[in-house]
Image (cartoon, rainbow, N blue to C red; front, top):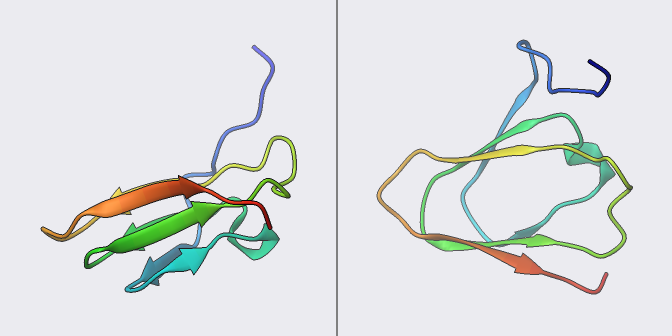
Length: 67
């Protein structure tokens, strides 16, 4: 079928505090360690993909932003 998917060799970015995603995170695997918020801004490009994975016992909150 058609569509685009994250590559198996996507770069991994580790986050340990509040972060607003931007175009530099596109196509990345986001590892989260700790308790904090990841904000997804309204300005994200259509079709932008990230994978967000919690690698600790902390709570990761996903929030909509207005950036």
